Amino acid sequence: MLITRFGHAALLVESASTRILIDPGSFCGDAVFALTDLDAIVVTHQHPDHLDVDRVPALLAGNPGAVLLSDPETAELVTFGTWIPNADGLETMIGDLRIRGVGAHHAVILPEIPRIANVGVTIDDGTTTVFHPGDTYEYAPNDVDILAVPLGAPWAKLSETVDFVQRIAPTTILPIHDLTIAEGAYDLYWGQVSTHGGAADARRLAQDESTRV
Picture (cartoon, rainbow, N blue to C red):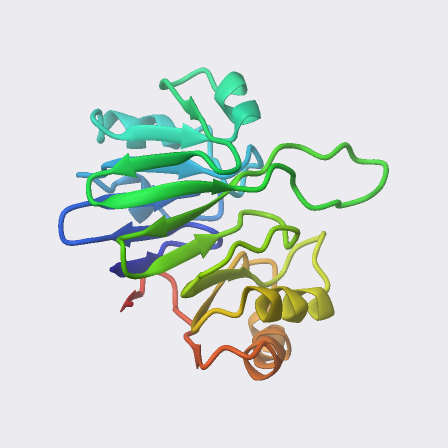
């Protein structure tokens, strides 16, 4: 599979014949919303940095055949497209890739803020499994090879990030959800996670950079 970072939490996962985009949010550059030939668009939850409601309609117009998959709350809220509610354990075959829902709730930001739905996804081609958790460290599926690690967020703490990576025990980690971290401080976060998380392979991808897994 080929994985491309498109800003903050957006990932494009591709096999030889299938293209799946995850979380085209407000921190993404315009390149995300100009993508075509997508087979599916997946949204883990409703927050703007994961779903840009102003620009996603143009993305849908450019990909009229794409399957639209989201957490159940987002599926009810959005007024554009026909979204299929995703759920923990639900499997959806898109071409030669299998999407499986993981979890149900967003991480706690503050006790005073109600938790919203958050359904992460694993994507696998029968050989390699990629996990994008959305905004939570709560759920730890088995047999994950490639983990997209949310690196910085109002709900995140560095020790919990490291613990999350250790519990998942992937071979490879990639940082996502990191545009809240200043460049000068980035290595304070990524250095600790890559050193102490236990993954053999830590790949920091730049925006719009791809890696084959």
